[in-house]
Amino acid sequence: MLAKELRLPFKDSDKEIEQRTGADIPWIFDVEGEQGFRDREQAMIEELCEHDGVVLATGGGAVLRPANRQALRCGGRVVYLHTSVEQQIERTSRDRNRPLLRSADPGKVLRDLMAIRDPLYREIADIIIETDERPPRLVVQEILARLQALPPR
Ligand SMILES: Nc1ncnc2c1ncn2[C@@H]1O[C@H](COP(=O)(O)OP(=O)(O)O)[C@@H](O)[C@H]1O
Ligand SMILES: O=C(O)C1=C[C@@H](OP(=O)(O)O)[C@@H](O)[C@H](O)C1
Image (cartoon, rainbow, N blue to C red):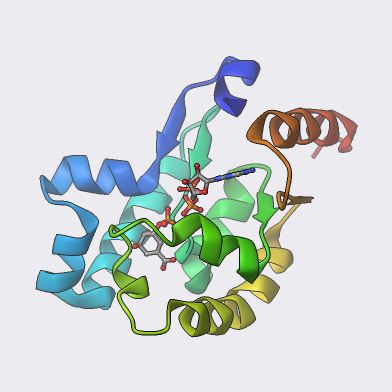
């Protein structure tokens, strides 16, 4: 939706990894482990951040590696779509495609992940937007307005 408004191509790093490997992400986690997936993710993010004029969506763990944070910062503006853990639990409860959430207590996993990742997202974000109880259309409008208000780099 954002890419359409900005008239830019949209890239999803997870989808690109799946297309290139011909395997889905749960399969990559099963066969290569999380580190194997993270290596593929890092290579993909470094490649995609070199493109100009692209809206890039990453997986939620992309901020973990310093190399990814640097590539994302250098590549353009970074927007952190903040969602409370309560909403994350609700939004992911019917989704079986997230290997890290295959747990007896996905709420605890999400709380633990958020404690580690939230400061990392904040470290690199140019813009932080609250998405709880706000439809995607409003979130996109706010991103557009806040991008326009940023001083040039
Ligand atoms: N602002 C929003 N309001 C309601 N539901 C949302 C909103 N943003 C995303 N969702 C839903 O939450 C789920 C996870 O969103 P997704 O974009 O896949 O997150 P991520 O890529 O960060 O894992 C999807 O079902 C999506 O439709
Ligand atoms: O949070 C994570 O570490 C991950 C999130 C996933 O992407 P989404 O954020 O799109 O679910 C995907 O990259 C992989 O399963 C790891």
